Image (cartoon, rainbow, N blue to C red; front, side, top):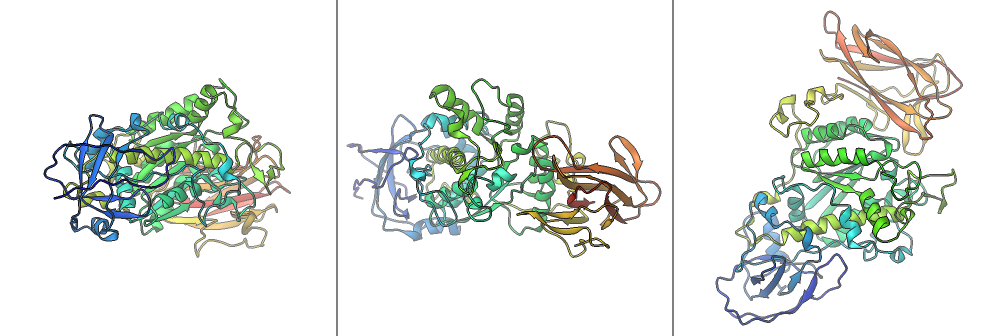
Length: 582
């Protein structure tokens, strides 16, 4: 069988691999059929022979003239059927080979490349300067002129905690499904920064499209144009981890499909129980890829040697390593840039924009502009490019790739806490049943997703369900002594979660009364059936406060009850965001 040598054309960026031409007189036998992806121009199925040099990431590919349809899985079949006319070969050396872990092939059930194995060159995600914004992304016309960060800065953002080779290779399964033109679902959870507030320029117009999530997903779509990549940015302004956990539970309970990847970006609103949110998410999504993005809460611009949130970041890294989760640390990338390239922290994070101008309410360091979002997307893109380079060290010929690698992630709705008993032991020694939430909610009154039984106003019409700020609905009053009532159901182990607004001005105190035989543990005192919620605090931010209350029935279990609220000091307002019971 004759061999012909060709070169893969196409543009290069610093994320792509360098290409050279190599000649050889070696005899080749037992050429294996495989499927590959062209660097530019789409996907193709082609047979290759390959010789692997002494360096495991330096590869020499030769194209043959025969083609075979791979195994029965539709994804594998598409490899051969899409563009069978492609016949290319190349010599490839990855530019981030120092970060590649060839032994990661084994958890996938694959073998490392040998000297007679075929190899595939996978595409790479572009950085912001090379990216072409799609219809779901907004960046200004001058976006290409924003300086590109050195690779070492991006790599610093990946170095804090990387999953070990024994971890479940969810990222590689997702990349293989992208390569197979499958549908990939990505969920992003966080607060107002993650939702794009002040990245530019008008709420509901450009802000949802200039986020790092939109820019990152756009890069994935560019790289895998025949795949379908769906983004759900479920971030909500003022929401921290404690606020996010109930939202994640309700979302998965009402979902029909499991996301392939979930990215958590909550630290702008405080640290919270990062281990708890991972365990809750895994309870419903046992095969989904989880990623923690660390940017750190910002009260001002950073400076050299500020020791920025080091202890908290170290704990996040410990949790990430324990649970085999990728931690993306943007603050580590900032440190490397400032300490090694004489840069200013403001180059990578500055205050945000409103109406195209610096934020008109003064300092706004929680909400950076679109350039910061672009750099965060660059770090995320770098991470996936490292993982794509890792996959290239594996034997991906058709008889070596199992159908199970293309399996969709699982969405489950367990009926008890025991399904995760054999999963990773918690660092905090807390099991799922002790996490302060409702994994099996019986009642959900949520302002952005009200139920038919949820009230829309109070009896005297002083409470109303509406948005006092765009995208931030709630049950709101500024009139004292008018009650609003939420019907609830309780299990024999009653729990109650109340989320409300906390802010620094024009916010009051509400009285809460629970109409139920159960007594409640409130601020260390048991047996309570009524207490107060103070919405005011001195911090110059507005956020969602989520309070958990554990109850105990005195006597028989009575499932039906009600929760009543009234404002007790005016003319300040009070805002209820959700009431959940189980």
